[in-house]
Length: 191
Image (cartoon, rainbow, N blue to C red; front, side, top):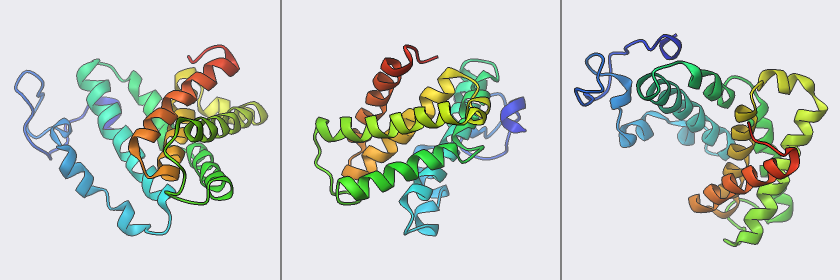
């Protein structure tokens, strides 16, 4: 409700006066505090994908929906884009596929080499898997009805998979970008 209607939630630090719509708005939560709020790695210590997806969902809600959507752009359009990260199990499926691929081809979590070839391999595999799922199951297209939603979900799954494989966040970022390139090459568009 708060994301859709830009409602004020009474928490956090004060925002700069030119951005604040009320006291203690959610946009004022510092990254350090936000990281402490999400306890998924403690709650799911043996499931790194689940722990990561909890962070993605919370980040998409707060920073994409509320901060970018309501404060920066002034609308609720980001709500539609960000909900793809946490409203169904599609992203979960793609990430668990990536985890299985990492275990079978690269020896497990954090064991893959930090090379562009490895990133290309993992990101391409996860992206192609996701694209095949979108084509095979039309309801996934209905759930992620916008091209930017599909592009972001595929890229997030690829980035998460690359990060888990290498234990390196920069590898995840490269996996995100590689996914965008593979997606555009495969479907000739992103949005």
